[in-house]
Image (tube, rainbow, N blue to C red; front, side, top):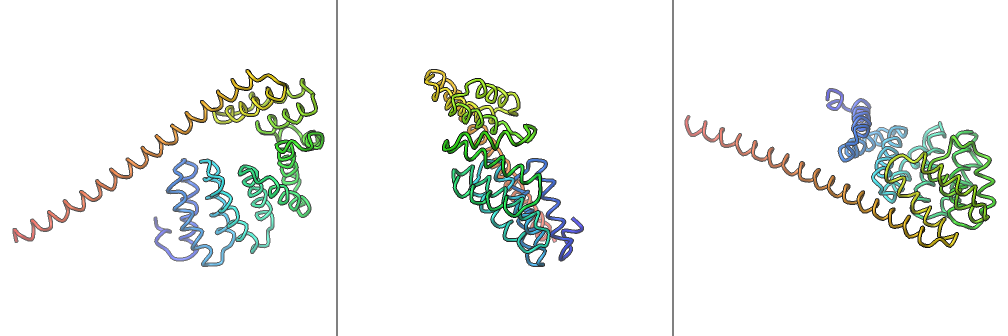
Amino acid sequence: NYFADKAGKYRYLSNYYHGIALKNMKKYQPAIVAFEKAGNEAFQYEDYLYSGLSERNKATIFNVIGNNIAAQNYHKKAIASFENIPNKSYLHYAVHSLAIDYFNNNEKEQALILIDSLCSITSDRNLLTRSNLLKAAIIANKNENPKYSIELYNSIPERYYTFIDYGLKAIAYQELEKKDSADYCINTGYQVANGVAAKGTLDHLNSQLEKMRGNYKLAYIHVDHAMMIQDSLTRARLQESASAAQRDYYHQELLLQEHVNCHRKVNSFANES
């Protein structure tokens, strides 16, 4: 609160780290407000590092809540800020995040263009590994060159894999009619998947796998289960949103009532006088 009252750098740093704390507590709406304040003021003071970090954190929040289009827009804003700072690592990682957004929004060609461009300019080994992993996932998802996708996947240690990578690698193996390898990958994906939503995504991929094998009944079971998970998550999000809206409504009502009561007391005191 002290720094929030001060002008300049202290104020936007205060808002930025307040946003970080709120984001870590999963209080996303007020976190976005804090990052918005921090980013706008940092940009006014030409602190492009913190304006970019603020935009990137907003993008991360929208990724978490499943709004990848909004995340894509904020990653673009982060990139615009990071282009103005000497340390290009921030820029390169933001470009990688934007490529993931394009992939999630089914803009695979645009994602590949960004990844190929990134691989040609970065010397960061970690980023190169993650970029090749994303490239393997995109190619596997396109079902155009499964052999190349497998080659890319096999060049990357499995410790970098997510559950999605195992699922997409399973699809690529099945395209090559390597059933045992496909089964290993899809089963490993389920083992490392954390949470109901992740398992629902794997159910969609497993349905695709069984359809490729001609097992249409199993394919239907998997996709039906995935849809049930998706419906339950949607209901939970709607209930959470409704609860938050109701809580904010009652809070505003309480503030209004306190305001009215205060005026009544003032008027009453004035009349008595």
